Length: 151
Image (cartoon, rainbow, N blue to C red; front, top):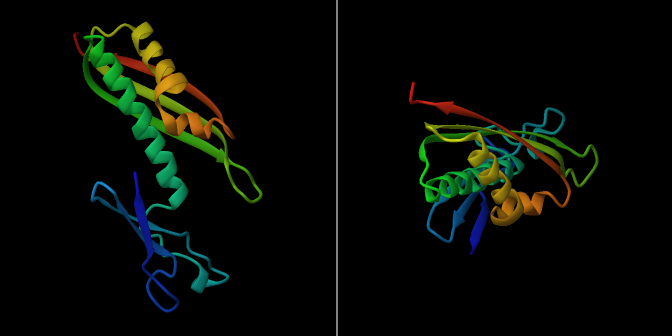
């Protein structure tokens, strides 16, 4: 896997801290820094997600992918899956994630809550490399709701 990240801005442009990432699979992702009122030349323009937001989003995508795949392989009728991630970061540099909570909402027909709980656990214990890496610095907790569409 590879990725090339290039700085797009410099002082005097709309965003002094904009970056574009081109992934090995040929996709492009834009990132930007937070505005810096004290030193605008060192800040972004809030034109795209912050790099750490993309880490959090990638982790959510990784674990949601696992949960859907595990449920589908178990022959469950999955119709939707979302995960809301909330996090806390250290106050000092490096500002690593210290807490992450993931709340899953799985929609489907007749999906047993135990199957969802198992899929989430399998993702976090075995499959989702992103959440397993982040668990080195962050306390990761999960919760879930199952929305049954059979009624």
